[in-house]
Length: 360
Image 1 (cartoon, rainbow, N blue to C red):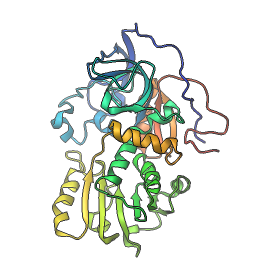
Image 2: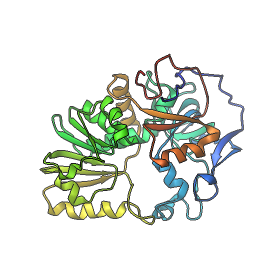
Image 3: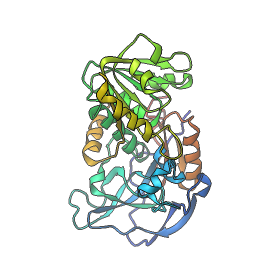
Image 4: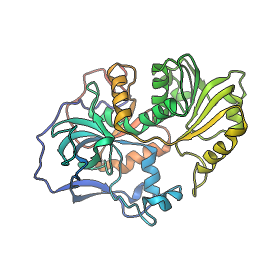
């Protein structure tokens, strides 16, 4: 059973005088063994930035890619050739505003927010104001930290290249993953008939978040079925383009989400490029997408969450000192939902409520 976690009540007063903090840093690419807890300088807020007192940080596959430096194309693209340019790991964040830059008018000290930043595996982090939104009032900090990258990617895939419409038949390949769990719920909220594909042990979870039908990929190959879909989101990368196209309606759309699959050099880029090359010559629309959180999409997600239409599913939380174990656990592929680092512990949640937000 998932571990219970904290509410969204604020804890001890803000300490504006602190000049150092604890953070998870790395000075070379590698496995989770390269991560270590270290005291470093507290970041200084820029003119367009917001300084956050971090309560929780979400863990997603992008953290693993930056930690390992793979696919290696990332190193050439500016993440750092021999070591990460940004020493502190972590992107997804939920916390309280401590101070703002002189150009920031939307937020003020004391606001509870969520979004993305550089270096969320730390006691403090700086974020651009246009990458943050006010935290949903019905979520804990830990739950809110699970939302930004995965949910924004799912939303952008569905509304962007997916051009989802009410009544469409939508298939989510990888429905039990971080992006997939949000994709199922968002697609349902937008009026689609949703089929999720996952492993046997996670079928119940995908059903419980709202999928109309769930396919166990160990027993059924959806690409060989007679069922056709208007839109397929593929987060897994374990099927060829031709196999996935076979499961589409004649004018259906295939969206390749994220950067999984491929080799250690360019990852899934080759597959995405093939999709763009093939698309003009077939009746299907084939589109890759790499999502990124922004204020507009975070605010839309906040509305869905507060309306009860979308709920983050959190499997496990880890303390900051065990961030390396959190990434190892994520990379093993057995998580039943999101993995979160609880940087600051607060009060317990009400009895009977799990981190998944589903009554036990």
